[in-house]
Length: 408
Image (tube, rainbow, N blue to C red; front, side, top):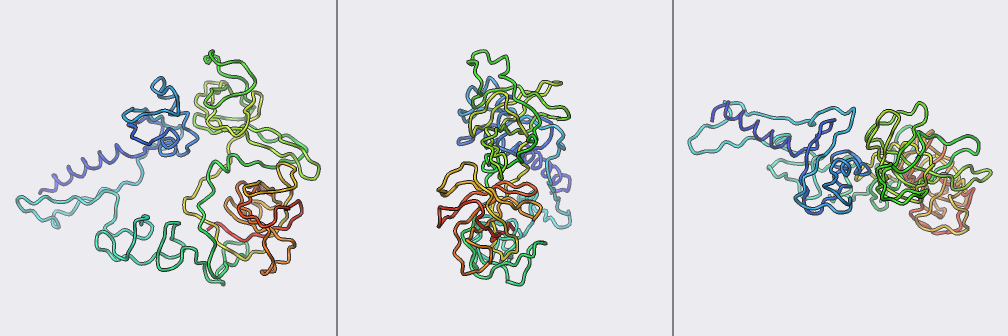
């Protein structure tokens, strides 16, 4: 086979490969729905966040009458996002050297797979990996602990911690020897977006706009003071706020105010900006946690990207704090309840870190852990966490906490 024929074959393969990729950028592309797909999944695949599904919904009306119902065979336009590079990603096309390609009649020359290496390394292994030999006969060494995912099932335990003398970051953390607890995935995006947070009693919470009313074209909807799921609303941006199509906004309300604690802010929903024309901004309600009321303020969603397979590694840490309080004033706490901590990003805390709750702050390893708390939202000086394990339901303000798990 000639070199020109190989180049032609590679180009044909590349063109087919590109058509099936998630192309980022402002240009539109199409997708044919297959069984089991949802707008949620398509938005996560093509637009980088499942809460942007209203962009696909609006771009394909009246093809989609109900965002709950899409059907195999439908062909949707996938809109692009502004200010994104129009690239296909890192695609390497390798054409064999003519001197290395045997030319024999009746023998079909195999063009190497595009974008793959002959011998996949540990980072390319999937959940189906089960031995020391790759599918191309390449020796694959056992992945180091830092490269293992939640699916790793090698000779060593997936939760085996690092040696005790290895430090983690600049917090003076020391990993704990022995077996780690269960391997947890990263905190889901929805938990972060739905988490309550604290604001100071004085001052106004940061926001970028206000929900004004339902868009006029939706005349068949009753007039009331609240919005429903997948209704389109008008947002009045505040001075200095620059919104664009694809932005995700979080509507919120003041749940309660308490001296010594602050203002407890509760998110009520997520809205996706679908149109911006001058000072007119339109957004779809893409998720609801509570009543989304007209007149509510909105802010940009917290900056967080889930890391599948990431988990908190056990550590011995000097980072300690206390429980400040709870969104609701109840005497008994249960699994999944939310707590506010007086530690935050200033101390290097990130979403996914885990704290243990104890009667005192001595750090005695023999002390019984009252609860295990996982951080789901963090700002400079405070964090919001959820109870993921509990032995004493009478946690209260002032209960001591200590960092016991650090996201790797």
